[in-house]
Length: 271
Image (cartoon, rainbow, N blue to C red; front, side, top):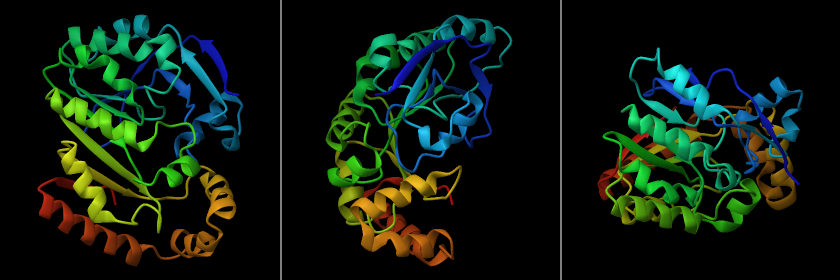
């Protein structure tokens, strides 16, 4: 069971250091997806939680839309990311609609928006997204293998639903991209050509790639998942992630670059 609690916030529009965006908005604290590799688990410590509790709680910033209106009074126009340390379309959004209301406000104020999610729920808001002059929607997809998805992203939408959502958005002329990260060695790269071709088929314009990093206590949950489901990979992960990862991720970069060139998709790397 995931604990859900409504909390007030004092500000919601935060300056961001993430490349390519100016602000970040996180309508929730915590995430029901409970991804085993997630870096955002560092947020748990600010709410008297341990990193291993990530995925077991979500706090709803119940006054976020009203606070955003106040924040925007003094904010210079810039690109807003939804979201940096939570998924704006995790299942609780279906009940509260905080993200949708935030988008309606940003559309009225003509702020450019970039969305990153793992949820097909974003399709619900196509009508709002089409009001923006500048908008893009990205989906995190680290594998096409549903068995791997269930192990490492237990609360997230199935891969097939994300692909369907990407196709729907593309058909509505809403620019889309895929965040292929973090790449899970020997699991995400099972068939890279199939991955890139699939993204081309659903209308993705760009693939952003990032490597797996050990941060904020995520090794504990990664290792646990490997022991339970892929024990033969545990030592390989140790060697790559705690040793020299340049050969593995360097070769990966070359392969993906060539495939993106072959299928006419832009690609960018975060490492």
